[in-house]
Image 1 (cartoon, rainbow, N blue to C red):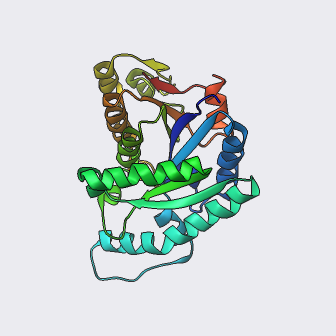
Image 2: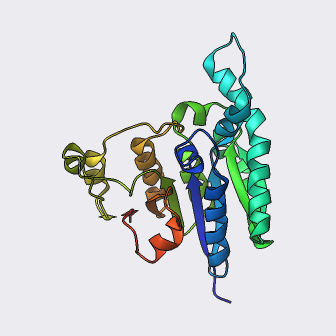
Length: 254
């Protein structure tokens, strides 16, 4: 049997909400549909934000504490709902899914790293798609440092995946000049990482806590592990399959 290509797919809050204030079931259906089409040749591990965005749909928390603790509480409320939505929709496409909550400290301990790899390997071998999020109720790194981009890159490196796909709300990374001229032009292939860093204009997304800078930092982590990164427009339908067929503009970081 031909070995399947292992893909780490990172989906931010902006993609999951399609830049609205609600989680888009249609977007999760789009992701499930593409994974189902690719399941004979690819195996997926997903790093998904969105727990806070789900909770905000139906909860308003009153608190005198600092903002970060409110966000942690929202993440605690939203996470089970987020996974339930994934499981319901994925099941309709014949896909099995599971939840994995990780903290950055897990990547600093040898035993924890071994446990993560072994558990995820067992899940994938049994046709389960691990859906990973940061354990926001005990850790604040995603809330403070960038919408799971770094978590996705660390997980991709640990699992030694073949490809890291970061879904965002642009057609990849645009040249600085083209943004200035208000005619965004995608950098298609990046061979020289230092040149890329000079092109980045940082802008935070509306729901996510990341921006293009955090995606470049994630790509740097992946590059160190010799993993290729694609930055694609997750708001578009069929964004994964279209990228594979080169039907859309996106950035490929070699």
